[in-house]
Image (tube, rainbow, N blue to C red; front, side):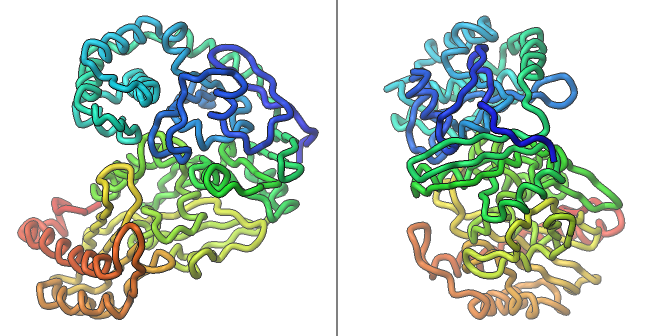
Length: 500
């Protein structure tokens, strides 16, 4: 393992170098910006990554001499995670990078009357600028998708979307020269293979580690098995901002390159645990359109830019959107402790509420996801109170394998129906060996009441959850019935919905 002497947090803030010591390791970036730097354009709204008022741009080297830039929520990002990165706030857009582009954005917002009380405006401005700069404002729907993680309490969405459409018609700002210069400056402030930060908080001493390879990660986690792993902090950040937990040792895995791969081997996809949802979206959508649609609705763009595939699994939430989708596909999990690696069916990772099959010092390395075969059909659908950027009440994902007209295998996975993401074994048994018709679906719907006794909470009642789960089975049947002529012919031609 490389030298682990304590170091300051070194980063660039709006183009200026910073070296910070003494701040608690769980200081949020937002708090630092507002209270220490007095950059108050970045606002605090929800303190949980939901409203987007705190949106800033984070840049880092992409490993190929260029930059990877992404908008994130500053309210749940911890300050030590900024080490070796560059931060750009709304103040920067008006005075430095891409000034011509910033002028165009300001004009679009002003001329379109896209700001009312103004509180949310900085977050919208940063998010729109990032999406425009990244070529993602292709049409009106794309504008809506890009600002789905930004909330306007004045309900001024129409003019804001209009401003985004105006930007979409303009050439994006030319920032290549500045970006290359920034990438070089970031290369000059790297701290080595392992970044270690020490500080005092109100709860006592804190340690922060940020390794860059998986072997160092295994060593550090082995030495500190009770440490908290942090990837995008989209969950852990709330432990601090909402639950006020004291975290003494944190290990940041966001720079471990070995965890950021997406590979395909013989029809099987492998996702490193550190792959963000944004990075995974296109590949998951290629498995099946329903997966792409689910990922489009997975939180907002800022959360997708920070949250990871491995984190969504490892936190063990019973309402995580990805696990049911992946369980239905027959995904497997790779876990490592020290030098030892083991492989586990994803569904077996979730033991009971708040408990996963993961030993102290053991961490998720990768996820293995098979593509669909020609004789398989897939369905995934999320039910939530708010269409965009909301937590699921029920998440359902199904994969049926057919032998002619008969179901030879059924995998029905649900989130929000139990203390863990779970398969509906009774309903699966009812479907096997039968045509997937109205009679079989009615029997499977009845069997779901044996598989689940959902809880009632603020998102949905037990009765609603069970009825919604049953109705989703019927929805799947109706979708397959609508495509039946193509499905029968498509087993050989690959023309059917959901074929690989």
